[in-house]
Length: 169
Picture 1: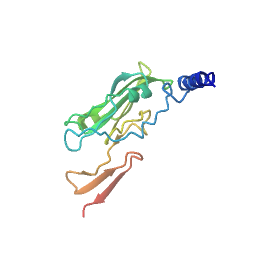
Picture 2: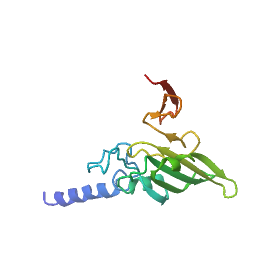
Picture 3: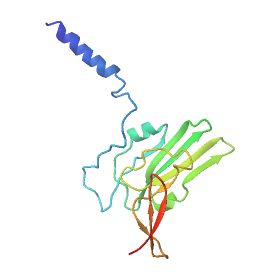
């Protein structure tokens, strides 16, 4: 009986150390992030995944700084640089203003054989994924926005990137 306890303890430790689903796994579900418990610094506050020149998306999201975005920002920006084989060379994610989100899309650099894709999104920690093509390198806005001249309401759906225009009632 006394020999069974150390053997069992060793088996449990080895299971945790060598298990692919423990600390060394890259299968963390970043979509299931709970809302922050700390008080918001101002109304409509939000957080984004933030990193500077990370090597891959997992490392960026895993080690992202957990802080509130400044009040002069409304969106989360992701800038993804990758080579002609699709391998990420750098990833930057941060809080962004509307003006920083005007250049969304993918741009190929012919001289360096690299592509830069930029996307912006609105919402708490919405920048989980990387933009890799023109389908997902978009400006995804969830809240309705009043347009300046037409008296219409534009609603942008981030997943499908469709725009519906509805008359105001």
